[in-house]
Picture 1 (cartoon, rainbow, N blue to C red):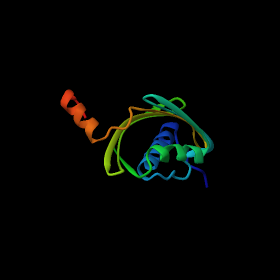
Picture 2: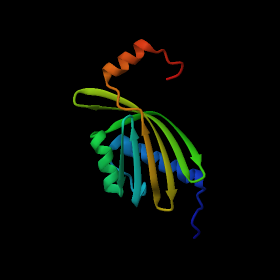
Picture 3: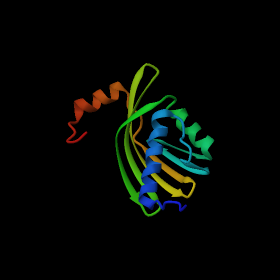
Picture 4: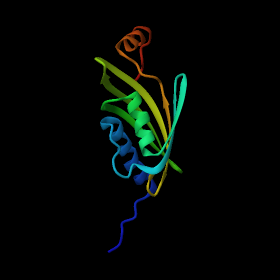
Amino acid sequence: MTTPVVDSETRAHELAEKLIALLETGEPPAGLFTPDVFCDFTMLTWRLQSSGVTGLVGLRRAGHPGPGRVPRWRFDPTPTGFVLEIEESWDDGGEHWTCRELFRADIGDDGITQLSVYCTGDWDTARRAEHAAAVTLIRP
């Protein structure tokens, strides 16, 4: 029996979908990350890093302690992995939050080896209302 060959773009897309599952559930699916995955997370005025799956998941849960939803996303393959642009929403502390993030992932045979994350910052209801009053977006 032969093992089917999966092209790199298909593999990258599968990992991007697993990353979205992590964002929505808070739990990393099997095969998403290599054991020594490195994450470099940049937000508006701060930068954090983690090493290993436990460190990366801990970093994620510190900022987004509960499950969320990713209603819109865009996937672009790269020679070494993929870029994923997302919009995310979640509830925490009685407030509804949203953010936009860009992920650049390098992948290997065992999953994502390195993840760079760029976040717009977390917007609460008041921030979204302030933005809506000041700006009319052409596209969502």
